[in-house]
Structures are given as structure tokens and as C-alpha cells.
Image 1 (cartoon, one colour):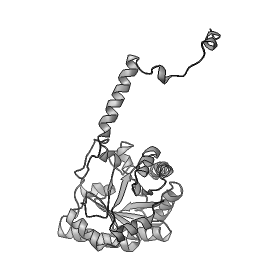
Image 2 (cartoon, rainbow, N blue to C red):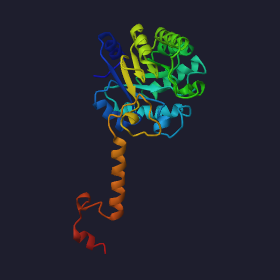
Image 3 (cartoon, helix red, strand yellow):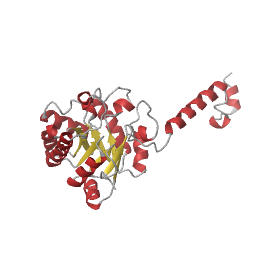
Image 4 (cartoon, rainbow, N blue to C red):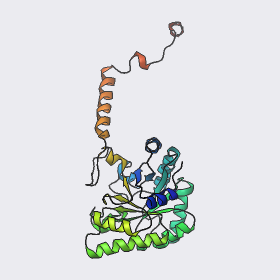
Length: 275
């Protein structure tokens, strides 16, 4: 059965944990979907993981639409959420609605995600009023990394904690059906989760959030440029891939691949007629 915003609401009400993983292509989306994961996030982390950028700021709407549509084709049950990239919604409420609409129509999203709290509440309200479900994202917001001075835990001081809680209330009131909490102290994330009516999805925010999200390449050990503290490697797929690539390289150069069982036959008399 296709997962929807109702799935998220029911999970919160029933105390059931939600799962979310990123994906950026059809094949990975199919595997995640088959595993029963509730939601697939087409994150602007594709800038780092797939496109080789140093940050997410360079990711464009066209990038998100291209990869989002590929993921949507592979996800039959998981709710596909697509990130709104940098400057696709900050400029105006009008731009936010137009670009969210493009992600739904062209990217085949089931929902969109945007970063920020109080300051983007008008955009969230307008997007949801247009019939587009929104996931909010507060705490460490990677698109604003230059303002934070790096990847740092958010909400550690009293003022910062109050601001985070204020942001959480603001996005809920604006109509977001869920909110991602990134790099937030576990006790603060627990408090926010208890106070909100909508589910919280944690990434580096402790076990008391209503759900969790990870970048799939991180949790599979495929992405080694930077590994955050909160990442658990559920497999060392990167090492397996590296060894397989090496073995392929060696066998082709040694002439041991392909063997007879990897080739197609043809009658000798056909070949003889060609000489």
C-alpha cells in the first residue's frame, strides 16, 4: 500500500517509528522500497554524494527534478519527498509555490522538503494551501552552512534551544506534516517531539524522534569524504564494491574474463562462409 502523509500522522498517533532513507536513482529506490522503508528522500545531498560538489548550494531545480523522477519511478510504496534546492523558495512565496509545483509535476514527488523555521513559515503555508504536502527541516540546515560556520550541533544554548522550539511550532502551524531535526541534542529533540503533534524525523537527533533518516551512501559505507558522528554503517558496501572493481580490472587485463559461459554461440559453418 502506498505510504502517504496519513501514514506519518497515524505513526505519530500510534507511537510507531518511521523510517526514511535518501535515494537519487531508480535502482536504489527499488531496493529501499522493497525493504519496506516508509519514505525516500531525494535530498539535495545528491550534490555531495552523486555530483561531487563540496556542498548542497550548487544543486539546481533541474538536478532535483531529474533525480526525483528517477526515484519516483522506482518507489511503488514509499512516500517520495524531494528537497527544494537553495534559492528555489527563499526569494519569495510565489517562487516557492511555483518550484514546489514543478517538483510535484515534473519530479513526481509525493511531498517537498524545505529548510528553515519561522522565516519560511509563509512559504510552507502557501505551498500547503496549494495542495502540496511539506516536510520542514530545522536545526542544522545544510543550505545555510555558511551562516553556521560549519557543520555544528544546533540548539545547545538556552536561546538557541528556544529558537529551535519556536521554529518547530511555526512550521507545524504553517501546515508541515512532519519536520526533520538535524544535529540537535537528544534531550532537546525529545522535548520537541513530545510537544509537537506532527512527527519528527531525526538525523543526529537521538532515538526519541518519531523517525530517523540517513543518507544511504553513508549507512552503506559508500561515501567516505565525510562521515558524521551520528552515522552507523549498516554494511561496508564501499569495500565490497572496491574489491569487485579491482577483481574485474584484473581479470579483464589477464584475459580470464569473459569465459565461454559468458559468451554466445554461433555455428562454425556460418563463420566459415564469412572468410
